[in-house]
Length: 85
Image (tube, rainbow, N blue to C red):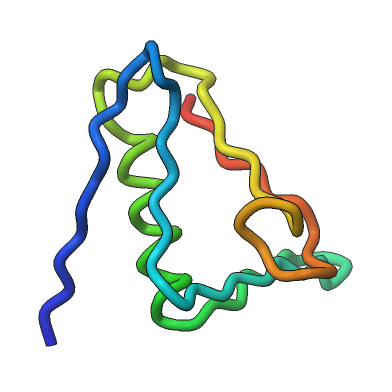
């Protein structure tokens, strides 16, 4: 099975452009000493796209994406911040 990804080009005037696969589901759970990211196939592909977009050379250091139940994650999820260092 081949997976093709569309990685949006970063544009500093538009900021970070999120791309989500249809039907994606992502949940982040704090299990005490660990954090679990639970996702269906579309969710895993979507997370990969967000991270590859953030990894582009044109994205400045310290830029981050912030996912929560109001944007990107399922209801009841813990907030997830991914930052480029």
